[in-house]
Each structure stands twice: as structure tokens, then as C-alpha cells.
Length: 186
Image (tube, rainbow, N blue to C red):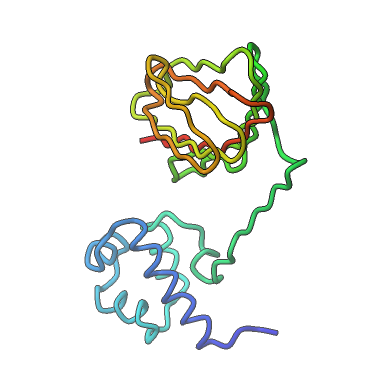
């Protein structure tokens, strides 16, 4: 069943507002860059205009989005990774497994990991790029986590944040220690 023209115009209006804000552009600057009148863009964003294909293409180029992104409503993205699924990476020197839960999308600045570690040789990490900050929430067990000179002992539910651009450590103190780690890139 085809969408009514009114519903398509409302989708375009919401998409234009969303993408213009994402781009950090004013109404006037977006209109100027697209070569259209500010009043035309204002009408389109309020859902009272009737855009031509040419106008929409000009706005797509200005906002750096595919044409379809303006005329199709965004769909919520739900991702599920079960406990026994996902890509894992093993440490070479310690009993430490990092499972990527959510890789950093192109315009985001973070990665999300599920860590499983065993007592023994700690996972010592060399400094990452300048500005990296890591967040760890322990789910199970106990661990020493943080900068290598002064790690913090954490238990279930505890959070520790530390700069990832200095040498840091994760040392499990109990078997099957589990944590969630977010690596934030500035």
C-alpha cells in the first residue's frame, strides 16, 4: 500500500529537521548551501511545502545523506548478542577474553566490550591514542582495574573510569570475573 502524499511530506519534514540538526546547520545556512530560499526550507520542515525531486537532491547533497534517508522514516535498530554468541578476542599473555558487543559506528566515538577474565597473569594494556577514556562496570567477581601504578579494586556493580592513553591493567581476583567496558574515543 502506497503512502499518502501527506504522510510522505510529514516524513520528509521530520527527516529534514533531524538531518539539519545533526549537521549543526541553521535553516538559513542549509538553504544557502542548497541554493533554495529559506522560506522554502522552512515550509518543508513544517510539513506545509511540496518539494520537488531537485530540491530534495540539493538538500541531500548539502546534508550529506542518501536520498532515501529523507523519504523513509527511520527504523529503530535493535541488536541482541546472546551470552554464547559474538566475536571474541583472546589475550596472548593472560586468561582474558574481550567480546565486542557494539563496535563504534562511523560518527560515534565509543566501543563496548564484555570482558571475561581469570586470576593469574593480568591483562596489561599499552597506552591507546591520546584522549581515550575507559569505563568499566564489574558484573561478577572482583578485579583490580585502572592505571597500572594505582589500580582500583572493584566488585559487582562497581564502576571505575580511567584514562586509556596511559598504561592500564585488568587483573581478575576471582574466577570467571565479568565486566562491561566502554572505550570512549575523544
